[in-house]
Image (cartoon, rainbow, N blue to C red; front, side, top):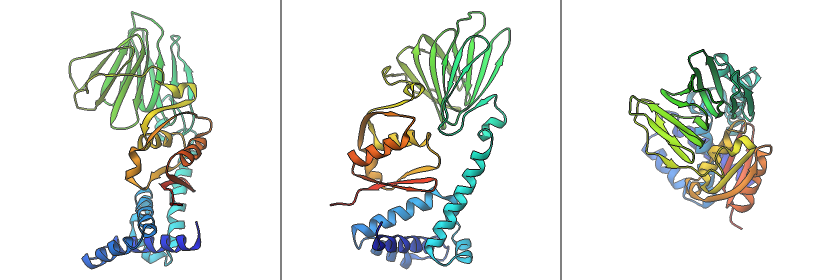
Length: 312
């Protein structure tokens, strides 16, 4: 980034802080709109400042900022440092926070295979937490957060039940994936048959090659077809994308890297991405995106900015 770009970034940050100080009125907002419309570089600087403001919660306290710092570069450094410190504390723990009450947990970027007492196997994806409670009557597991792939040993006398966000997935002998990263739980079946119960609705049976999503306290969505060639590719150490929107690709990649990935231009979210990428080298995916997509990747402490590539 050259000196002129740094100056515009500083000015954009300073203007944005003034707008969020609590004392800005219509005149200041119109002035900011006029400023960002002066050129594409001004607009780019404004969008990056807005992305940083949203990505680092500490930066929203503008009044506190005015008391503590005077120069925008110093403000940015302090905000980034606060974010780094918070993340560092979490990483320093022996397991993620969910690990405090779960039997098994993985950190960001870590994947782990578990051999259960009944012979079943579980693969935990990045930043996931799981508890196991086996009894003579049933095999019950709880996915507190994240994603897990289950390869179930057959035992007709003891159903295999996975709880996730108010729903249950039941299987006898099968292979299925449960993804509970957000408010919506996704169930993918790659072998056998499972039964999904959620929100008191009628149970839904899923066969190999089918996918279902549900939300807590809501009826499940319609069953969708599942691409078996790319399903649970993470368990094999791969990310496979076939004409997936860039926004979805970055959301998926973010779970394997520390910190945040922020796309500063929403117009880029729908750009299609295809390819097979190695989870051992997430940075290679970013480098490939920079080479094949109209984007510029900027690495910062615990933050990766994806912005439109400057025109030649």
